[in-house]
Image (tube, rainbow, N blue to C red):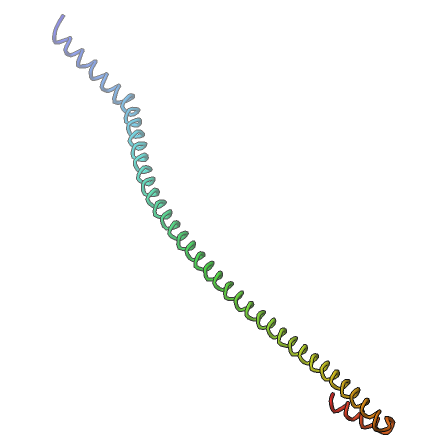
Length: 157
């Protein structure tokens, strides 16, 4: 066995192995490596996009929360204003109703006073006529003085 022949044959076998590897195995390996690199790059990009989207969503949620708080405070302010308006309206209605009741009571009192005065006048007139009638029966003829009594009664009313 010749050492040179062994070395040359091993070199040729190694060369064939390298050629075979470069021709058939290496492209598949490069393709797999490139696909893996692409997947890793896509994953990193997706992670970055997710991180940015998370930040945007966080900002949006803070904005929405701020708007909701602002809207809630506006609603509370409007409700308080409406409640104050309702209270003022109720007070005004109560005043108007009280004034109406007071005016009605005054009118009723005036009506009662007028009625009482009229009743008193009627009674005074009736008493005066009765008194005059008794006096005139004794002194004068009642038929002659009937007109006089009617005029006195009319004046007292």
